[in-house]
Length: 183
Image (cartoon, rainbow, N blue to C red; front, side, top):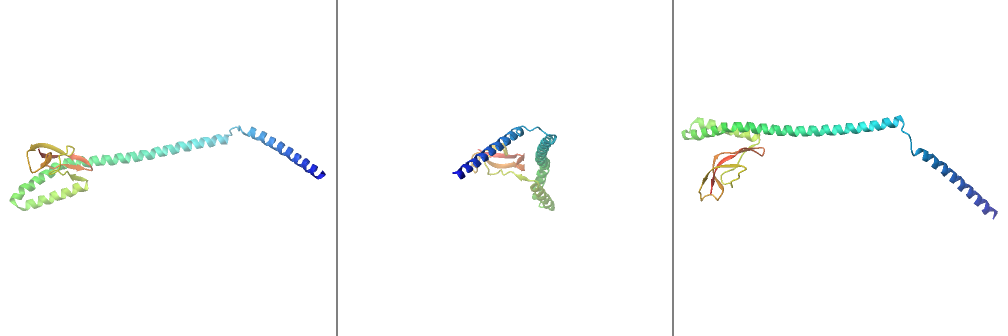
């Protein structure tokens, strides 16, 4: 029993020491719970705020660059289409010259045909495409009906003749096709 009594006393002493140590640690952490800001902490906080501000400005600048690049591409596309619009009457006149020269069957016709072919290639490289008209259902978004006719060969509301070819440039109508529509 002596042995058990000594063990109990040792355990009680250890418990008391553990409780005293825990109380001291709790008192220390309570005083540490509300730390005062040191100058270094204030500087660190300011640095973090400035880093955040710089990151936001960098992201904003990146968005600005993307937006202006897109606007520049749109402006270029519009410029090309405006140029094409101005060149189309020249192409029309060349086609008329070819039609008139075909009757003579001279070298003039061959030369003008070559010019028209070259102009068509330039237009294709710029993204200009002719609008399909004859045999197509009339589409007011692509066609400009200037005449109507009764024609059994074509269905109702179908383009029967193309009076002047229309063109699109990069999906945008540059000139509507001037057409005759069958009723």
